[in-house]
Length: 400
Image (cartoon, rainbow, N blue to C red; front, side, top):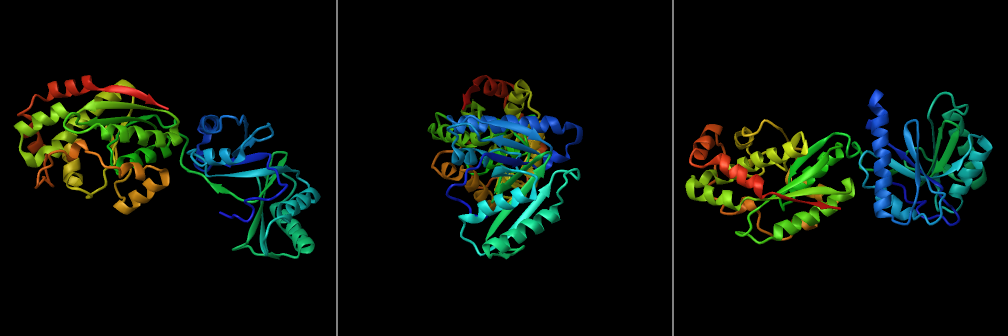
């Protein structure tokens, strides 16, 4: 986005305009989505900017943050807003009037300390009831800047922008639109259970669910004492980072080691990883029932590793009646890495640890297993008892 106006001496923003996109299509449920977005904005600012007390008002098609209180840290608030899902973009602005002479004056003030040769005026109005027409504002204010500042109009690649938003009885002038996360506000789409490993993929999948408005509860399967507790610490750190998007999270820690021990001693090696995952799904389903969650989320990407072939995913998924959401199913590895870097989990994921599913992996794992083959292997185990033990081992903690 445009950075010409990043720091303008003497210019004091008194509002931030917050725009959404999808929420505007929600019809009669729109108020519910707006209220959740407003609540999340206030929560994000409260957590990240402890000394900044603000109010958020709802207008048609947007939310407006007032910055008139003392001690408001604009940079901190901007940083907090970049992590709020549901925001298409936001814009620090100062209040003007729906009056051409005042808009000309305010646009001139906006540009007066900026270094630029070309510019664009971009006006918009919230309804047809507003007396000033968009074209009139663009033409009149633009002509004023040309005449008084000797600058050129460039509608395609301007050095600087002046946006004019008019809605209800208000008008605001601002220099840039800062992109938000998009999507829907966390908390509007119900609960899901995300199976979180210490790798790159699963935290990205959890983020994708958050971006679609889901509240994510995490389950991590560990193999202590066969492995070190490093994966548990990694997962806690990942969740702390993901909490930028949903503020606080519940984490379940489940002991997989006793189940793995039985699988390793009683079943055919090439099916081990798939059997591990079938037990994970069974246990996660039980936890979902306790939490009133409606789906399981995994970081699987089609064909990425042996356990993620279409046949294997089908055979593993047969053990649960719950919906299994795979947000990364069509992503390649580099796309997942890029997204992990964007959300801040990549550097945590690449820290060394021992993943429970990589423990004792066979040299030639099955790539096209059938459900019947896995059921035959599980006939050698006391499945019900192992699942009950796994659920009983689960402990949970809240991570703020």
